[in-house]
Length: 258
Length: 150
Image 1 (spheres, helix red, strand yellow):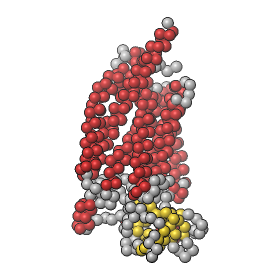
Image 2: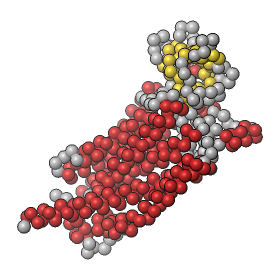
Image 3: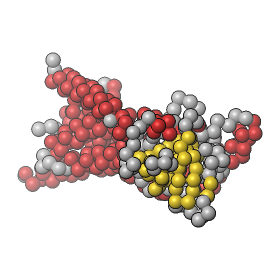
Image 4: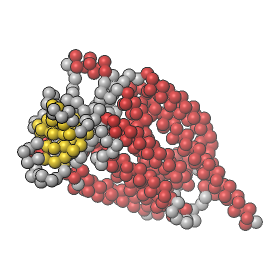
């Protein structure tokens, strides 16, 4: 049986922490999370408020789309986060499979619903924009389809994690799925270059200069920072509550054994 | 070899195999994953008159005409090499305009006119205020939407 985070923490405590492994220790992570928590909360609140105000009230209307383009301030950061969180999910999966880090699985499990939510927001806002601009809610082009697959992989990860009676088996299956799903990431990103799609090519993530006016880039950047801070905030809350829940369960088990 | 290293090797080899497999699948499906064909690509194709296809490109400047019934449109879709006449009865989306990207779905008639059942506007990746667009056009630095018809 793999040790619970707490057992691992007490066992690892006397040893000196080396490099990144220091943060694989749940007790140490709890301290780090407590320190990060207020910062990420403040950064998320300020950048999101500033981004919404700048994006909705200050940024000028687009020359083609008028005000409808403003959905970009939610749509694009949501897509970035959906993919960044997936990278973290896969890295956590690899760390859990190879090194059996006690924290890696906790981070993966805490991240998946946040990533799934951002993917859903991305699909929803894109659909709402597509109806008036393209003339359709949805098309099966490679960009839209690969993003929908990412959403399903997230849901599959969440489902697999709790599909087994033995939680370590569920964690392993979910970690393998997270690694397999990595092939989808380059497909999502390059779909607009590799194939003809209805979706437009990249505006920001390309070698050329971003093809967006600075007055529109500023709120977009603020929203991106805000989404990142929000994710960090959610991650610290979710991992901390998960560790605490396990402690309580262990205490109950110890009590009932006596 | 420690078990840890064995697992690491297993994951690395597995990921590499998966990547190669995905690459092969994606390149094998290349043609089928295309959302639309350009007018030039369509020329060399033997098309069944009942086959639904999508054609994409730019709406040629000055080509849009409305029939007397007021709901039927006729325009030419160009990839700057070849142009294809499209006939469409229905509402055009907000972003539909001459010089902009468009994707039309329908069937090729025997007389060589494309009968569209659905017309979608294809947006480009440029975002700017109206004043900037006007200034660019004035200074001659306007790149237009050439990319949209690729």
